[in-house]
Length: 546
Ligand code: ADP
Image (cartoon, rainbow, N blue to C red; front, side, top):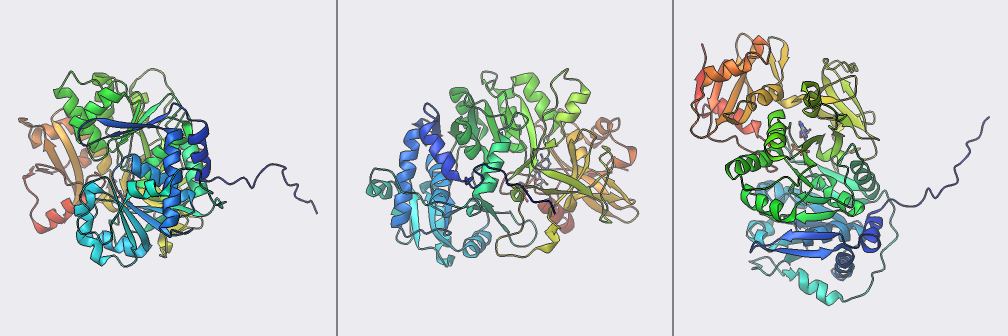
């Protein structure tokens, strides 16, 4: 019998966030973290100095009685103190639970009680949102206010800066951690049923951060300045804070100022190279920049967009009109989140190149992906056949925190609920979320593709396509459209725009011209709400074509 010959490497060196902290302290001299403040000015701190505050935070956590494995929650926007929690809490062996500040009250109560959060760190600007819920939290022992603002009625509220002051100077004796121990917790937004907790390990975060830095991912380096607009409570801000810290990039945090005007000002002043956010925010920014030609966004040579399909026209308009390059990535809370990245080979920017840019991209190294059809059979990668994406890899969830959901897992693979085709080059193209598919006469119509084509019309600001029940075909597409102000485009004009681009039977026979597409807590089109309005008969501006 042959015997395994063990390698002779330091295989037990743990992949933990303590490495990122030490790197920031020792290797990131000159790298800074910038936060936009209430008065429009910014604060700046270099990484080594920041780690001294993280040491104080570690001591403060110990003084509060935080022990390994305890859940410590944050209720905060993207700012310096939230970043300190991002590093400090996991480094003492506790688990940072990032609460989505835009969730409904019942969901927040459910999540805090389910996670059994022991401490909640809250931005002073968010105290009024949290305060009415405090009575419903069963496990919280301390509230810590970040900032000088009013503590409201939060029971026994402590002050972040006072805790750090009391903690005093000097290094902290960080515990030896196992790379498999939990570091962070994030709940899915729970579009169906209760939100579910995804519990990241030090190892999964370390590997995810490293892989996203690769050249065919975000490609971040020491020379980059990263503007993380995607909230730190939305799937680890897509790994940008940890990845940036690992690379030694500068980090720029907009706090709660996410409107196009403050963002454009911040970009012009701080010259980030990468900005990460969902398409709706990029869309707002594009309209603002078009209306204000003096705004200079051209430092964004490597922006990252995802969370929902990124319209090709949005990327092209940014590139052609503002010298901004946006690359698309795909993933979900359960995948840490980045799983694929669209980085076609550079060359001529012809239609084939843009076809690839508009796809969701190739799996990152260490992510394995397959497509499974409705009969459980694997679908070939031919660019046409579609199936549900299943993924596996070292930063993909293997289960949910304190909840069994066997349907979500298939012998070591995560069922994503996304339907896609994959081409011969390994580029994934999402056609729909399983719950959004439109099945007409037994065939699928891709709502994502129809939306993409509609949003390439110059007068269409937003488009979301939902299924409308139909006696003959089972379902037909209904296109909810927001037109540019002053536009006189009508349903017939939009049909003519679509006619050369999609199959005849995909052409919608109904539009709804709405003032706004409702958005989820992380800024995606909320089709559930549109479907609800359709069912109730309250969907406005409906126009039927004969
Ligand atoms: P939720 O949208 O349910 O709040 P997530 O933020 O985890 O939670 O979203 C994950 C989902 O977002 C994916 O399953 C997919 O449907 C969608 N998504 C993410 N990125 C993209 C993308 N680039 N293109 C299309 N869909 C995307």
